[in-house]
Structure formats: structure tokens, C-alpha cells
Image (cartoon, rainbow, N blue to C red):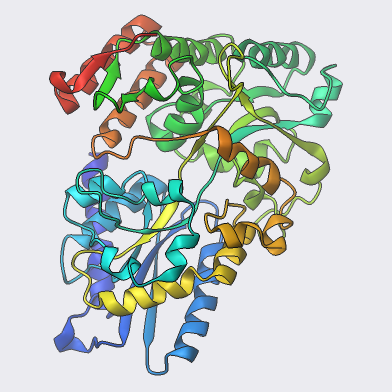
Amino acid sequence: MRSRLIAAAALTTATALAATGCGDSGSSGSSAKSIKVVYWQNLDTKNKLQANRLAAVVKQFTKANPGTKVSLVPVTASENDYYTKVQLMMRSPATAPDLVYEDTALINSDIASGYLKPIDSYLAKWSDWSKFVPASKVAARGASDGKTYGVPDGTDTRGIWYNKQLFKKAGIAVPWQPKTWDDILSAARKLKAKLPGVIPMNLYTGTAGGEASSMQGFEMLLYGTPAGDKSLYDTSQKKWVVGSKAFKDSLEFVHTVYGEKLGPPVDQALGANFGTTVGSELIPEGKLAIDIDGSWMPNNWGSTSPKPWPDWKTVIGTAAMPTQDGQAPGKISMSGGWAWSIPAKAKNPDLAWKFLTAIETKANHASWNATNASIAVRTDSASDPAYANSVPTNKFFTDLVRYTHFRPGLPAYNQVSTAIQKAMESVTTGQESVDKAAATFDSDVKAAVGDDKTVKGTS
């Protein structure tokens, strides 16, 4: 039922866009000097950072290119619903935008569906491409053909945010840097015992959380096991990993957090908008002590946010996520990010490319990542003082890039990610044991990719 409702909403959105002229054809007034740019407007946060940033670039661009028209089309939705709506738009020439904001985790599935245009011919003539960090380029590259389908807009890392005041009240020394998973659990247990009414820690979980559950909640654990990069997908064998101790150990951590009531109440944790609640309410109100989350969290508290909280700079501390037993390299992070892509059915790809390069100039790239508390992927922008000094935690999270991992850039990842979320949810609610949930995950992955595309994990 939910998928049908989403599809219906998406079709309504697409139809509305066409009716307002955003999806019009050549016969209805579009020209070589007009483009439509689609981006995500988070339904819950009311954050206008992207809207303001793009409006400023449009002003620069139209001034430098008289007679051009850039229509900005925000898709106001939850993150998962944004993906669905944009994919439906890109299916038809009548509704396809000329430029679209893509989560790099979905680029390969959109490539496989024929939604995106390779941009190698444009990149070959763009000298700025050499300024982009190589790892960020991989995130926008087709796994099957090696072509590039987007220009990365920035990346992110993940770590631990903790409330220093609550730690001191619980008798935990700060600054705090756990060395193992057990150190995290020990701190959470102490917080629970000393501070009734405070949620000791947040670990995202369940299907409603989507990639927040998969990345912040699970893969920050999974990639920190001794199996490391071979914990989910073995690139040397080109197979998905099943039946591993690493997966069970990670699920056991989830089970411990929720089984011992060290995390949020289960019904709250499984809510679709829980991430917004964490950033805008629980942390600033001092109701949550530890949060495994992303580098972007200050967006919830800045002067332009719906609920500014200037005191976060002194109240909140940061720590790196440790590996399971403290084994080398000792720290772990996960990175994702977004990119600008040109849909295969774009009416004006040349002008879209020109506008894309305006978005990603050194100055605009640095300004955006400074404002958005994200990590610059242009080397010259990353060294810009305006970026480096914009948010106190920028340096900490930028330094975590050396410990970071990226999700497998394969179309099947979306199905594997959903299987992870299901396994997490079943142990969070207590409906399945860790062994049973892990076995269900194995079956789901084999059904999704084929038994011959899986390999048994070694740890």
C-alpha cells in the first residue's frame, strides 16, 4: 500500500510540474536557453540551505548568461520518497529535469534503469575536474561501464556526538574517545544508571530509517569488524558476503542496545522522522547523551536553522567510532554524499552542464560545504579558510576521511540495504534472535542477487 501511495504522489508531482511549465516540451515554449533543476527539500527540517544556495548561483549564472532561464524545482519529501519521485520524473521526456540532485548510493541503480546520461565528454573539457578528490569521483562512476554520471557536490563522514555536560554528571571523563564497542556500551550503561530520564545512546535502526539505519546504525559497526572492507561485498570475488561472524556481531550490538534499553524507546526509534527528532529536539534539549551520526548535524543548530542552538559548540563533544576490539586502524567512518547528474531524457543537457559547472566553481563549492557542514571534495576548496573555519567540527570530521569506507556502488546495494534494515528491526523489536535475523538476511540477499553472487564470510 505504501509503495502505491508513494507512486501516486510522485505521479501527481510530475503532472503538476508539467502543468506549471517545468516539464514543457519544445512546442510549449522551452528553448535552448532554459533548464529545469530538481533538488531535494527535506519535508521535516524546513532547512532552506539548498534553496538559498541555488538561488544565488542562478543569479550569478543568468547575469553571466543573459537570456537564460533556470527553473528551480524543489521536491519536498522524506529522503526515501524523494528518490521515488525523482525516478518517476526521469522516466518520461515530459517530466525529466535537465539537472538532478542524486544520492551517490543510488547512482548505479539509476544508471542501470537508463535514467542518467554519462558526462565524460563534458568532463574531458573541464579543467576543474582535476581538482576533485579521486575517491569522490568513484562514487559517481558506473560500476558496469566505468563512465562518470555525476559531479560530486561534497561528502560526509560519521562519528559520535556526545553531551559533555551529561557525561560529567554521570561521572564519565571528557574528552571521551572509546577504543572498542564495549567502551561505548559501558558508557551507555553508566549513563542509564546515573541519569534516569536521559536516553543513553541513539543507534538508528529499522526500515523506516532507510539509509540512516544502514549507514549510521549498522555499517559503522560492520565495517569496523576485523573483516573490514570485505564485511559486506568482496570486491576481489565480486560477490556479496553472507553467513559471516561480522554480520552477527554487528547485529548483536544492535540487540544489546535495544534489549538493555540503552537506546530510545523502540516505537520512537522505528519512526520515519526520528532523525529530525534527534537533531532538533533530543540533543539540544539534553535528553540524549550519545548519538552515532553524521558530520552534518550542526545544520540543526546553526543561526539559519528552525531552532538555533549556539551553545552546542561548548555542550557537544565529538569522538571517532572505534573498531570492534580496537584493532588497527582503531577508528572507522562511513561516507556518502550527493552529486549533480544530467538525466538521459534531459531536453537541454549542454546548458545543464554549463549550470553545473557554475554550481561547482571553487568559491561556490567552498561556500556550499561551509554552509551545509559537509566535506568539500575539491582540494582547493577544502583548503579555503572560509570552509575550514566555518564550523568548529569541520576539521574533526574531515580528518575522519582517512578512516572512511564507501558503500558498494552497485545497483543491488539498495536491496541489500533494505535487507540490513529488516534484520536490524527484527532484533530491535525482539521478533527474531540474532541468528534467525542473520539467516533471514542471507536468504534475502541470495534472493536479490542470486546464490552464485554470494560468498560465505570468513569472520
